Image (tube, rainbow, N blue to C red; front, side, top):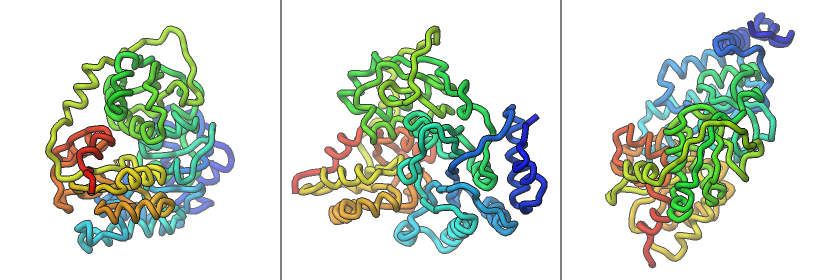
Amino acid sequence: MVQLVPEERKMLSGSLGEGVALAMETVVKVAEVLGAPKLVKISSAHISGVSYRNLGEEGVEFLEELAAKGARFSVPTTVNPAGFDLEAHSEMGVGEEEYELQMRIVRALVSMGARVTLSCTPYLISPPSFGEHLAWAESNAVLYANSVVGARTNREGGPLSVLEAIVGRAPYVGLHADEGRAPTVVVNASGVKSFVEETGAVSALGYLLGAEVKRGVPLLANAPRNIAHPGNLRLFLAAVGAASSIGMVLIENVSPEFRRVEGLEEIPLEEGELEGVLERWSGEEFDAVVLGCPHLSPGELAELASRMKGRRVKRQVLVFTSRWAASRAADAVAALKGNGVKVYADTCMVVGNLSALGIRRCATDSAKAAYYLSNQGYEVVLAPRDSLLKAVLERS
Ligand code: F3S
């Protein structure tokens, strides 16, 4: 039985409107199924699955109906990438019908009060604080919030996060509770540490960890030093999320809640296993390098622009970022574009449609992108960003 406080019972009763009651009813049902004793107040929500390709007509109608019933988000709410760059839809080969469907989603979310960030990096745009409870529904963001910030969120489903944003509550279970955040297994990276430090294969490491552990809260011991670089950390965590249902990794010198616990099972990672991940997505041939899974930060955009300065880009390079980051790194974006790089905001290589841009074979530094793109039928090469840049840049 989920214990509700008077304010929550009021929401359920319908006295705050039909939309709120509908949302509360579902959140309480989910809490019951998960065995949560109560709900917890959240300070923000992040909604995923908002691409027209994900939602389809039915999903759009669900959002429009909620909005029409007067439902409004009661906490700051951000939104994951859409199916295309809202300012470059024709260039991306998006038809009028698809454009309109996506815009109906955007309008419904705006009318309910969302900040339509269209990015999977809400932790950069409106960073949460240690100990805050959130309802976030994008795995890389969830992993970042829990592992790096020490905020608390489960890996919520897209539709549930909409309802949680309305009622400002989430079921108090899993990573919201202290006991759900205790390490469940030790992953010893000493066998791959020097390999990752030499090759930069942090994303493959994340994928391997996720594939080996699958669930729970792994504690990463003997982590490679380069994992702590912000861009690497995000690539690593995104890959963990793609290969597993893990929502938090405790990383030494990174995670505020890192603590050693005696008596846990220990899983050693071997170099051969990591090479296996890299071999899965190996090759030389590709139509384009795609970067930005997760969305590149302003700092990464600036770093990329400076790497390309005075160089000729001899292959197609596509960069995905948030509109927020692009506006903060406007000079870098202009320089990248001047170098022939395509910079897209609001969308990404996975939720967008690369084939409409004539791309069938892509090279990426993100194991998360590699995983999803190969599932979509693309030929994919996974390699560290540094190697990809070396392959596409030459002196001008
Ligand atoms: Fe973000 Fe798209 Fe990757 S949502 S984490 S860039 S798959």
